[in-house]
Structures are given as C-alpha cells and as structure tokens.
Length: 322
Image (tube, rainbow, N blue to C red; front, side, top):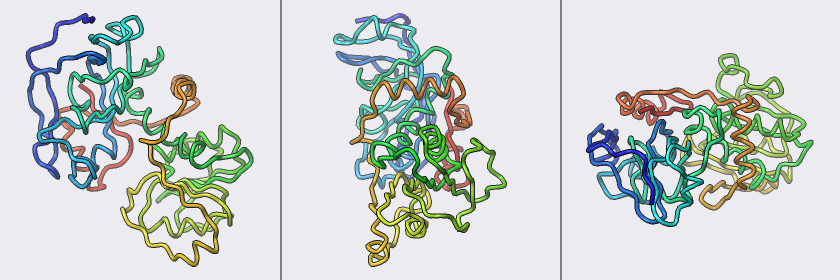
C-alpha cells in the first residue's frame, strides 16, 4: 500500500441528484482506495456522450443517486492498494483513467479525486498534455476500433465518415488516411466553416454527390444513416459509432438488401484495442501526427456546458479542469 500526499478533508465534485438535471458542484469527502485500486488526483475530466446518456436516465443501466459522472479523466497517482504494482503506479505518475465502471457502477472522474480499479488506469507518456490525455483516449480508441476491429479497413479502400468535424469522426478520417485509404470523404454540415485537419480528407456537405465508398463510419446516426448507406458500394460495410443526430433510423429493407451493405454497430465494451496501438496513438498526439481540438472549461462552468451539449447548442470535445 502506498500514498504520497495527505488527502484534504473535502474535495470538489459534480454530482447528479436527479436524472435529466445538470450536475451540482458540491464539497464531499474524498474516496479511499482498497485492494486492487488506484487513487488519482484528477487534473482534467472528459465529458463523453456516454456520460450525457447516463445522466439522462434513459441509459439501460442507472447508477444509484446521487452519483458522480465521468467515464474518463487524467491526473496523477496519489496512492494504491494491495495487488497494485507500486513501481509502475508510483505516487506522482501521470495516468489516464477510463472504464472499469467509472461514472456508472462506481463514482466517476468529475471530481478532484477518483478511485479506479487498476485495470482502468494507464500510464501517460511524457510530454502529453493532461487535457489531451483526458480527452483523446476514448474517442481515439473508438475511431480505431470502428475502422480496423469492426470495419476491417484495407489499404487502398475508399472511406466515408459522417460527422467528420467531431472528435471521433475527425480522428477516424485522420487514421484512415494514415493507414493507406485511397480516398477519405468527410461529411460535415458546413465544409467552409470547418478548419481543415488534413489536406488528404475531402470535406463535403451532406447533400453532396460522391463516388461510393467501401467503408462508411457513421458517427451521427438518425435519419442520415439511411441516406449514407446508399453511398456504400454493394458488398461494403457501414459501422455505426454514434447517434448524435437521432436515436432512431428508418431503413427501407429491400433497398438495404439490394445494396448488400453490412451494418455493423460498434460496442466499445466488447472491443479491446491492443496496448501497443494505444501507446502509438498517444505518441501521435504528442508529435502532432494526430490532432484533436479540445475546449477546456472550469468545473465551475461544467453544469452550463453540460446543458449546452445535451441540447445540441454546443459540440466538440470538452474537458473539465480542476
């Protein structure tokens, strides 16, 4: 058992007391670690669509109220329990925390301190900004899994990405280019308003005609899904990553059967990105090979930002700083 700093009597945290209501900033007692757990002082906490889904009360699983949201964050190790490698996770080490029931089955990262199971804690490479460390992980892994673990992208194929200005979409487009896709089409609402993140990605409006693609990465769902499937070659694949444009889609089944497109949902709870791939992707954020714009907001403004994200007034990758 190890610990390098004394915990304060209280910590700041954002808690949900009622589903559908924004989080409330509160002072509560900090958590204590047990066997197999790591205590982390959080510097930055990501706001994920998963967090918004859970706090809406419409997610299939509901945490007991009140609860602290937050699937993902980054910070520094404070201490660890028995069964944790004290050298690897020595106090002061920079780490990312993700998964392991955070923000759902156990208190999440929207707080100054969090206790996470050791399997949910990963060392961050030197030189990686904490806000990027908190915000890039899950979206980059989702982009990689959609392209390669589910979509089975091959070099030389044509790829189309809906919501290409978003976090997962922009990273999927960048990774597809890096892995040898012959053409990458990125659908966005207003191409002229989107900062070009790669000259190799052709940003187009949703109503623009294109040559059919081999692989579609759909990050928006909703009514657009049925239209985009028509842009996939017969025998191609469409990977459903998200549903920011709507949770329901109407498919004309005869048309889908004629197109012979495989519709493949991405479930990150069932996908495991190899550690060497995770390490390589994080390194690419440091050297600039991959880029993800991140908006940082103070914990004091988090409730207002969460409301804006849920209403669709705000978008992009947002990280809470403590």
